[in-house]
Length: 86
Image (cartoon, rainbow, N blue to C red; front, side, top):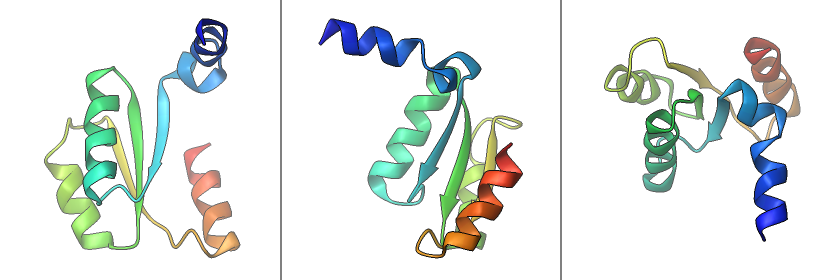
C-alpha cells in the first residue's frame, strides 16, 4: 500500500494541487471539497445545479474554487469543462 501512496503523491494532479470534484453539492462531495481545500488544493466544483453550486462556492475560500455546471452524462459538456480547467 505504501508504494501506491507514493505513486499518488507524485502524480501531476498532486503536484499542481488542482482537483475536480463531480457531485460537489452532495454530502460526500461537499466533504471532499472542504478536505481538499484544507490540504491546499484549488478545487473545480462540478454539479448539475448552477445556482446552488455558486452559493456553495461563495461559502468557501475565495479564489480557490471554480464552480462549473456540467451534466457528466453528456460527453460534450464534459469536454467543455476539461477545456475550461486547462
